[in-house]
Image: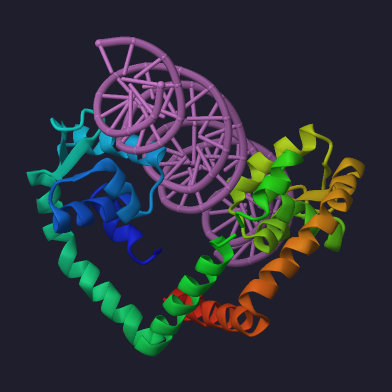
Length: 123
Length: 123
DNA sequence: CAATAATTGTTAACGTGTTAAGTATCGGAG
DNA sequence: CTCCGATACTTAACACGTTAACAATTATTG
C-alpha cells in the first residue's frame, strides 16, 4: 500500500478512508455495519472516521427511520469528486504492480491468504 | 496473531513488545537501529516502547561509549523471566497452527510474501 | 581545524487497531 | 404492555504506524 499512500496523502485521505469512499460509491447508501464489514474496519474506527469524513463533507449520514439504531451513510459530492481525481492514478499503480509481480502470483497469494486466515480463524 | 494476543495480554505485553524481547534474548546487547530492523518497527515506535519496557524493568539501556549517538539495549531479568513463562504456550500455538494449515502451505505463503514484498518494494 | 553533511535517536501530531464499557433502540417472551 | 436480551452504534483508553521536524553526535570535506 506504500505505493498508494503518497497519492492519497495529496488529497488528505488515508488508505482506509479511501476504501470507505470507494465502497460507498459502489453500493450507494448503506448502514454503518455493512460499511465496516466491507471496508474491514472495526466499529470504533468507523465511528471516528465517519465524523471526520462528514466534517469534510465527503460523506453524508442519516438515521434510518425504520430502525432508529442504524446509521445510513452515503457519499457526498466532494467525496465523489475526490474519487474521480484519484481513479486514473490508482489504476496506473495497480497495473504497474500487476506487471511487476505477475497476475498468477497475485492470484496464488490471495488464495493462500484466504485459506490460511480462514483456517486460522476457524477455532 | 490473534491466537497469541490473549496469552500475551495476560502478561501485559503486546505482540511487538514480545518480538523485541525475543530478539534481545537471542542477540544479547544490540543498538536501537538493529533492534528496530529485526523487530520490523519504525524508530518512533521503538523509542516509545523502550521507555515503557524500561519502566517495567523488562529491558535495560546504556549509551554506547564509543558512539554517543547509539543506544544499546539488552534484556533484563524480568524480561527473560517473562519469555520463559510464555515460551511453552507459544510453542503449542505454533504447532496447532502448523497442524491446521499444513507445513507446505505455510512455506508457500512465506515464499510468495517475500517475493511480492520484494518486488513491490523495488521501486 | 572549521564548516557542513550524514547518522542516530527523540518528539509531536494524527489516524487506526483493539478491548471494554456504555447508550439507545429493537424484538420477543411472558 | 412490560421486561429483558440482542443489536447497532458510541466512547474511552491505550498501543502502534506514519510522517515531519528536531537535537545530538559523528564523519567528511575543503
